[in-house]
Every structure is written in structure tokens, then in C-alpha cells.
Amino acid sequence: MSDKNKALAARIPLEAFNRGKLEVIDEVIAANSIDHAELPPGMPPGNEGVKLLVKALRSAFPDFKITIDLQVAEGDLVVQHVTTTGTMKGEFAGMPPSGKTATWEAIHITRVKDGKIVEHWQVQDQLGMLQQLGFIPAPGAVPAR
Image 1 (cartoon, rainbow, N blue to C red):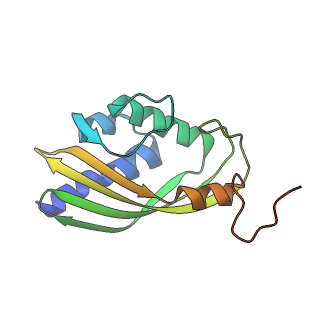
Image 2: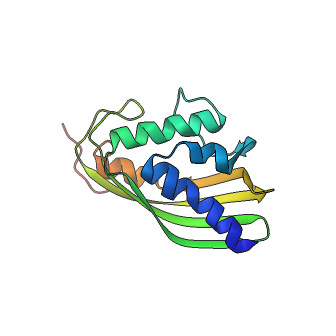
């Protein structure tokens, strides 16, 4: 079951986010799934919100790519350590395009039941991403006057 759950969980980053295959979201995530990760403001909860997030990220970061660095499964849980890269060429979450490339890491934990993801948690290096994109000064950077 572990390999089957890992393959199922991998479809979200590899097919939905990397390739824009939005139908995968409904195939893989249960309609009543609980997502403990916050979507950007203005996005609805559930699968429709995830679809809008995929569209927004792929629009803002045309070269958006998630790589699964490590994936571990035990029982009904799958844990993924991923690295994401992208160059911001469009607006995202109210931020104007910076033209800069960022690489950031995240940990995703999903719970699978009856062949669908029923729960999801995420820890993501948003600070590092925002620093690389130029929206937050990096540590030790001289503030603009």
C-alpha cells in the first residue's frame, strides 16, 4: 500500500502543478478533504481552490517546477520533501512580477484513505522565496532609503 500511496500523492506536484493537468486534482483529492495549508487570500477552499492555485502559480511562474527530493510512506501517511523553482514573470497573490528566480523547499504530509487524499499539511519556506523574489530584504541586506 505504501508504494501505491506514494504514487498517488506524487501526482499532485508532478501532474497538476508541473504539467497543469487540473483534472488530476479531482481524481486524487477527495471532495471532503481537509487541507491544513492556507491558500492565498481570495481563493476558495477545497479542490476548486487548489485548481485556482495551480493556474495562478503556472501563470505567474511560467517555468514553475516541483521536484520530489524525498518521499516516505507509512500506513496511510505520505511525507514529501520537495524543491520548487520558478521565475516570477506575472502577478501572484497581489505581488507584481519581479523577474527574479527563486528556489524554495517544502514538506507535504498527506493522509490517504480509499485511494484518495483526505488530509494535507504543508510547511513551506515562504520567507526564503519572498527574499529571493525581492519582496523582503535578506538578512544583512542594507535597507533602501
